[in-house]
Structures are given as C-alpha cells and as structure tokens.
Image (cartoon, rainbow, N blue to C red; front, side, top):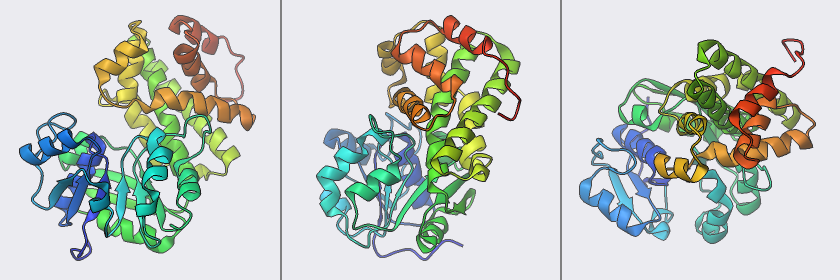
Length: 338
C-alpha cells in the first residue's frame, strides 16, 4: 500500500524521457511531484503543454506533477530526491549544487552508467561529493520510459545500504502495476545497469548484420558472463546479476528497439558515424561512454570482457565491425562456465 500523500513534493531531477516517465508514475500514484529540467525554455514548454512532446510524446501530465527550472526551488524541502540526469554529469552537477542537499535528504538515482575517466559507480561519486548525505539508493531494472508512462506492468530493484530508506523508497514506488523489489547490493545493481548498455550495442550490431537469433542469444548469455566476472571482482553479488538489474535489464535492452543502445549497434552495422548516430537518436547513448570505462575496469581487475572489448574497438579505434566479429569468433573456446 502506497504511503499517505506527503507534505513536501518528491523532486525529480532530469526532464528527459526517463525522468518524465518516473515523475508521471509517482504523480499518478498520488504523490506531489516537482520535475526539474535545466533548460528554461524546455521546462516552460512542458508546463504549457502539460506533456513532454520532445522526449516522451503522447502522455498528459497528472495534476500532481508540476514543473520548475529553479534547482533552488526544487531542492528547498523535498520529501526525497530522484535523479535521472545522464551519469557522466553527476559530479559536475553535484559540485555546483551539492550545497543545496540537506544532511537528511534522501537521494535515489535511476541513471545507468559509469563516471568518465575514473570508471567510478554513481554511489561512489555521491559519497565523495555529498559526504553529509547517507540516505542513498539506486533503482534499476528492465524498464523503458514509454511503457512506464503507459502504466504497463513493470518491476525494478531498489538497492541501498540503508534498510529504512530502501523500504521507504520501495513503498513510494510500489504502486498499481509498478513493483519495486529491495536489495542491499548497490555495486551489483549499478554495474549491471551500466554494462548492459555496452552489450546492447553488440546485440544491435549483430542483428544489423543479419546474424540471427542464435547469435543474439549467445551474445546475451556470454555478455551476462562478462557482467558477472567483473561484478565478482568489484564486490557485487552474483545473485544480483541473475535478477532484474542484471539479466532482466540485459535481455530487455538487447532485444527491443526501444533501447537507444541497441539501435546504436544497428546503425553502426549500417556504417553510420557516431556523429550521425547521436543526431538520429537524439538522446544520451550511455553505452558509448560506458564501453571505455568497462574495458578500463576489466584491465584494472584483470577480468576478460571480450564482447565489451570489441564494442570499444569499433567505437574508439574505428575497427570495422566485421573484424570485431571475427576477433570474437576466432577466440579459443573456454569452458562454458568461465
């Protein structure tokens, strides 16, 4: 049962497709929501149209959802904060606005990715930039923004080192057709959400080359093995990678064209440049930046990630896709559970 409507609104930071969908869900569940975006004209348009026609067209905002481009207003006294900004922007955002977060502010994030150049997980960045805040949580799982906005059945994982905050968040999010499961494995949940974007690029490229269902299934399965190897090395729980935030999200992004990363792979197979792809997709493609960090982390922890490595080569070393595929096919066959 959802908690009683709170005195202070839930602050949702990020007016892209995902932030908008989550704001719609929370408002539909009976919570006051204040959605923030950093582009004043875009926020004004959202308020005028009562919808986000640029990133999530066709969905009218519930009455409980309000808009603001003032971060000071949004963070004045929220019930809690849900961040849905691109993962690479977290540190710069927090350096600029960290003083606005109170010591007791509960903060959750729904972004998926690794910090550029450091490979740090978002909760590590949060701990460094907001040491005063201890009520932190990540939410992840097989979710497309459009389907959440449509109120189709959806399940996610909420992970936090604070049992009380994890339960509080789950209660807020768990409503109607939206189910929230609890976990304490922040490393596993964040890592699964980041790596699956890289693997979805590989799956999209394979489909774009016409390799068929056999190849797609093999990529997903061996990609999960990569995810689990790196997760083991970084302290994640293997069970997490077999759940919603691991295998569930991986299957979703590798098999459906609502995934921006899968579509990126298909466009790479058509020999389109990254500049052309980013223009066509029109939103952040987390897997492009994450591929570099995954390969760097794998090298640091001495873990083999052959699929992610070939995605990196195609994106950053201009390796022809056919050559990357041949490199994978010509690898010596290890034992299946390796």
